[in-house]
Image (cartoon, rainbow, N blue to C red; front, side, top):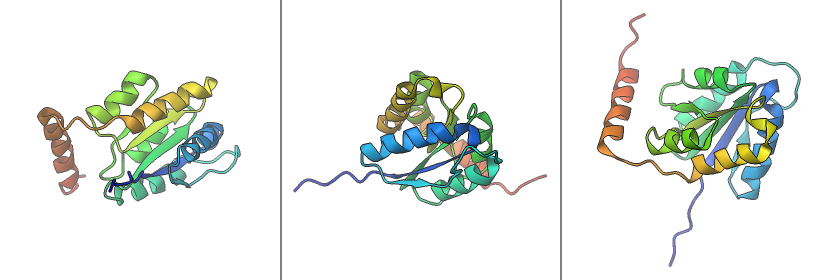
Length: 161
């Protein structure tokens, strides 16, 4: 008997500048039979990205690997910064196939950020980046595991602010 591969749920979120790209990627993920949860925004009306990206990151962080996330903005930079404020999130801003691959292979990114004003110029390119990220597995190479453990150890420290 073969085991059916269970796909992670993909949590989506972003601001108005990433809305169009979010909708394109949502359709793409659904066409590949990924479960999708859209945390908004749901239009091009101006909003503040932290209101959407932080709750999305919290859901991914609390999922024990059962969920991954993609956040969208004009460039994706602010969205990645906001997501990375959540303990346990490794959100990589990606804009080419190499960064898409390495974000998972070396850094085991559980979220990515994409720019609606950058990669959306070619929706097929954006889909390619998402596909590479989803299909790439973490290397489990000792040096990469060690580095991720150091990040987790830092996150576990009490705040000294």
